[in-house]
Image (cartoon, rainbow, N blue to C red; front, side, top):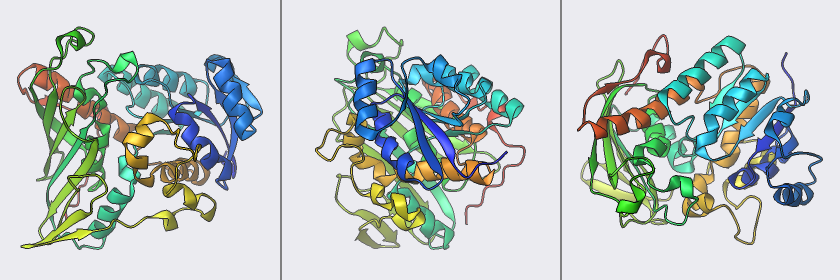
Length: 378
């Protein structure tokens, strides 16, 4: 039964707190409950935003019949377990990236969604960033012509982050670069081949058994002549934070700036032009349009580190909220849905397996592929 107002619970109040006021102002959402193990932090956030329903126990929250949907913003190792618990409890799920850390976990989530008919959406920021929406608009207007190749990178120094990040295989957190190359043509990955390069500090290697400083992966698209390349680094690589996305078309090409806050570049033959990427707040309900261009929950600069390093995630947060909530209200699939999220996430998981085997071709499992895949490149 559809509802015009969705009761949302947010789990994890570090990065997750960024989304609270967006849900509060969305015309079809009710910011119903929050969940955090640290009771002091829970009450601090709850008091700041006037949220009545507060939980320190996730299982207790899932027993609340008034919760329609949960938005999960916890450490990546918890994503699959918490998503599955929520689906089995009858709740719709929005989950920050990645969907899971193993192929098997992705399969379980896809199957649970099919069995229950509930909604799952992976909240991938880059595919709702203003830069991506700018390229998507050009593509849909035919300005790019035929897409010939796509490239993306996500380079970030993770020193000083929580301990579970230390030594993480770069491609295990690759959705920020895999997402956009698949999302623009609404493509699916068929197989991948990845090489590792360099070596991280010896003390970082034992936790995950991954030695590589950089992993770079080629993705072959299903039912298409297209391929893409994605690059990922987490430690011991000197580079300003960068989430980049390049697309090469027969008429125009778009290249992400090399230095943050400089203009991106449009190529038309031999004539490059720097462009200022416009904001896309006009695509949103008026009540949440302001969140594309300003910090969300703390105007004094105390946003979550990922929000700061990622330059506000391209204004994507209100777009993500709107896509999830409107999909529930309208009774349609969000983008990316469970199958699409699994395809994006499994690219990274299998890419690391490929790198550990010297670039071996790894095929995406069938559960990550839609029954019909049609990719338009022009």
